[in-house]
Length: 534
Image (cartoon, rainbow, N blue to C red):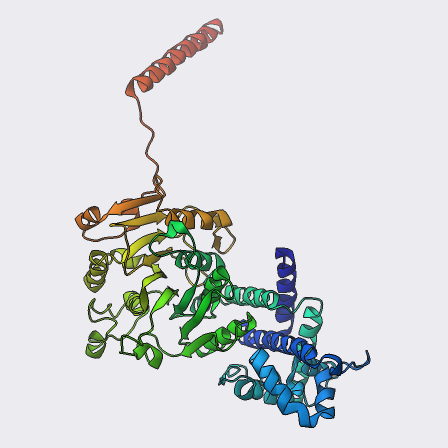
């Protein structure tokens, strides 16, 4: 899909959202819009596969009949449905009853059918509990089809849903249903809603440019990035995955078969559902990812509590954009937690290092971790200084990258990327100060493709350049009390122009001489006019 096509599809969908949401705020309407887009994707993929599976038996309906052909096949082949669905599960990993396919729902909407609301309610429950081998409990839990924001009476709500679904159906009819295209459109809409939501959006959205930097870094060989990408990543983890865009970016870098299993965790229920839909919408099978709804800091996911070293989750790549300086409740029990015991607890006022240590615990010996954090982690004292010092002494901090300010919807502060490894070769830390390399936008700043390429290139080949990047030995870092403030090592300030006093003196003498000449000429004119000199 070209940028122009994506932009056009995105604008079409955004215009529908903007036009139809009425009394509903953008966050609420986002969930309806994205869910319907998700249903359209699942349905179109399923119907395409069903047509291929049934071949000549796939019903051909007259042009004036817009219902799903599978509806007719189900009516005429009751005894064969079970075997057909078994085949579809084997090939597609899911089934959808014809009544709940997008084409059926869209037809109900087009004809203003009074049963749309009830059919949609049953359809969402069916997809959550019966479509997939693994149940997707609560996938549509944040979409309240009975909300008064849609209308006071059921008939009003039904009418409103008919309008929304009809408009979406018309708007996207001209666009391809390929997963990459609808996946791109989904990401575009998430970004648009994030921009409209302002600070709330930080919970679920990492700008694509920043996401791309992290993804490109963790997919390079950890021991020698200059050799290029790894052939395969067996396991990838994002423990604060939001809508899943960062995980999907890593997958995009590796290709659809370049990752064994994707693991994500998300505390916010709405965002957790977004992430699960996002994975499926990008063509992933339900057996290729696991997203868990829970609190990362408490670590209530059984998978991550496995104490047997042979079964412990070890990841080839860990990426994260956790909430910045999140307030948490460290206690004695957490002090003994296997994730924090050897480094200590992050302070109550900022859980940044708690998030970092959580992810670092599940990083494999040959893996790379890239995490977005506020600059405070680089220089704050107390407990954070102790954690930072131990990570540095143990040789785990590989690279520190400073990004420009105002890249995120949620905050205007500049952030940094920390790259960590358990077995890093160089006995230094690479500092990249990219804070002044960006394009200024109306509300947000942006990283251009060349800015992204430059950061990744300097990381990959461990390059140095004055006022941009420098490799700093551990001796110098120790002298600075393990303070990692980027400007201490790579200043972007330009040296002042050297002033030569002799040249300045000659210039002043010349000015003085010109002033004397001008004064003489002026006084001559005054004399001719019989006026006293000045």
